[in-house]
Length: 117
Image (cartoon, rainbow, N blue to C red; front, side, top):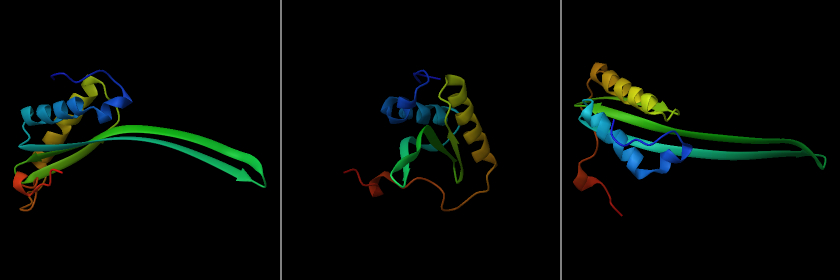
């Protein structure tokens, strides 16, 4: 692996980290790859008859990798950011894509059709 940084939920918004995931997927045999980083925080409060009933807090960070191998694809989601876990996610996605059935419409849109605003 190249420069994938150590474990942190902040990685999902790190453009360099996400770029490295794609680069490593291509090195592993994907013909194209897409990755989405997601970080969610939620706070829920319940009040009943004027009294605090419940307070819940939740956090989640994950990446979703779609690996394309010609006209085949596989999508995996992971929430462990160690080097080993990211390497395994990439390896599994590429291996799964090679065994997926072919789809004539599978693939990323051509660059000239993608809006860059």
